[in-house]
Image (cartoon, rainbow, N blue to C red; front, side):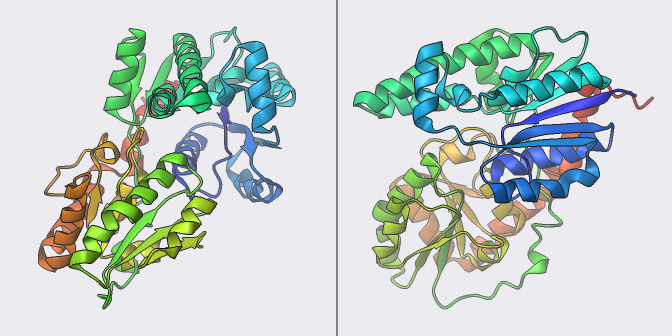
Length: 398
């Protein structure tokens, strides 16, 4: 039986943020099929220690703490005419470990999670299957930043978008299959590259509805309505979303519901995010051990992102927890649900009206929340999403 080489830009443990949730479930599924060798990066020594908890499911594990600064990555990207996000993950040691495993082990499939790790895949695959999970079209995100930004940052983001698009296309032409988190992302990539539906496919995120189960938490109606946003709070789209919502949207909601609160829940809030706590009714929690109690306590969960790629796990989690969700069109894109039935979709002043309605009409909010939970159970079970991987990786169940 062949073995699988799994490359991840961030070791998927603990599975407590968007990228690690998807990669963890994929890795666990593949480890149930064949021996898996996991190689990847972490951000700290604590993360490297935590990664060892994955050893029981793995054939081997190699973890590196990524320490290359953005300045060094930027200089190297200029020198080698490559995207900064690729240069930031360059590692001779990682390349040596990949080459060694391919030489010494019966690797017949390589699964790569996130484009940064594709640089370590050998040019000669030697008949091995190569599955590339881009997740999102990252080059499109940087191109959008480039349009929004002026001066040096605009030039940097536009350059990154161009070079990354070229890199993504080259990788996809080398891979047997390229995966994206939604049909919209896959369609965009096919249009950019001309590759077929067989070579470029969508594989949706799932949701563990047994973990995100409202029955595990008692929702008690608070005297003050609480609006909750969850996410990694040093990630630019999240930062921009909560800044706009706290300063522009939330005051319109408080005008109708003066006692309402806005809780920003997530690790590593930047100084700009922390400053929002100075606004009346705004709470910035920082990292919490478990986001589920905050979601369960929410009157409304919001996802007012202006720029979003792929599927937003924060929305899937809130819907699975049977909480009413108000999302922007960008955040909603890629989610197989019906606006007005499973969640509300709005932006700008309409977002304030949507949230206000969910606060003012508890019966309507409960109807939306119930339908959202039912949609998650029926459509987004992880095992159903991952069955397609078996054939891609070369596993024959016949």
